[in-house]
Image (tube, rainbow, N blue to C red):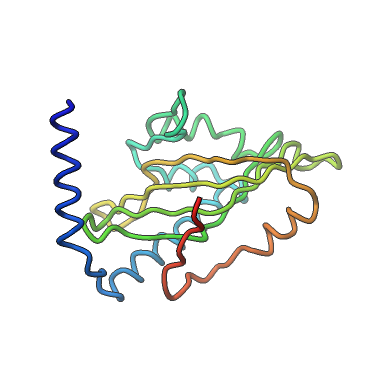
Length: 185
């Protein structure tokens, strides 16, 4: 396995050196913006409590919780595990992209990231809010449809009313003309 990893790293470095040229803008912008729109559609499926639409955004081989010890694998298993979140009675999640990019070396694979808002007891006066981030990897199928392949969230922290307002005000329907560089960690 060590030889395989070393070979992969060497290949990756060589491929990177050969492909520093940017992807043609029209292709990159189109795919990036398609993923932007698809991410918004995915979030809308939860906001509208539409379990069928939520499931339609999931790749059959999707993995959620990729950075955790316990992952949920497979579109059907993820849909089942998220059923309560999609229903939205005890807990729900809002999110939107702020960054999307497609791989020039692997067309049909894209990454999206942005803020997320977890709401516990969403219909109660004493609802609790937490803000974090999400990271998703999307795959464009042979049918041309982008579906989530890998997903995880991180950095969740309690949020006050002003932070919730700022989160909601930050949502943009329109994909930016050029990629936005993610903030450095």
